[in-house]
Length: 88
Image (cartoon, rainbow, N blue to C red; front, side, top):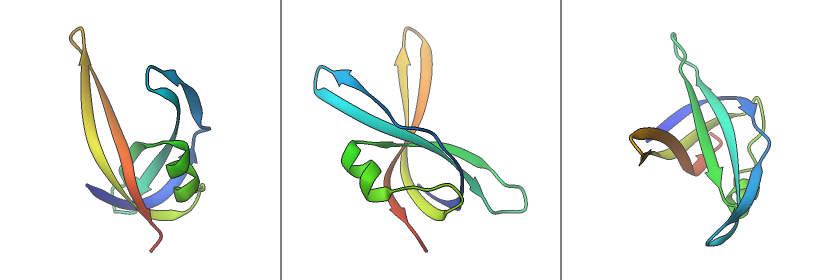
């Protein structure tokens, strides 16, 4: 999926360790520029992608992302992981 909008929040990156090694992710909030704006929380995963995308507050971007839902003990959790960002 793709959405174009203004970045209204850039949340500081988080990092940690898993069975596969170290990881880093950063979340941002994009607000569409429609008559009735919508907000989307999305995540960039991996230090390389965080540096490559270099997302800044107040930028207008088109974000391509994969929505994903995980389940754990009957509880569902959603993620929108960005795989591409373009500055139009």
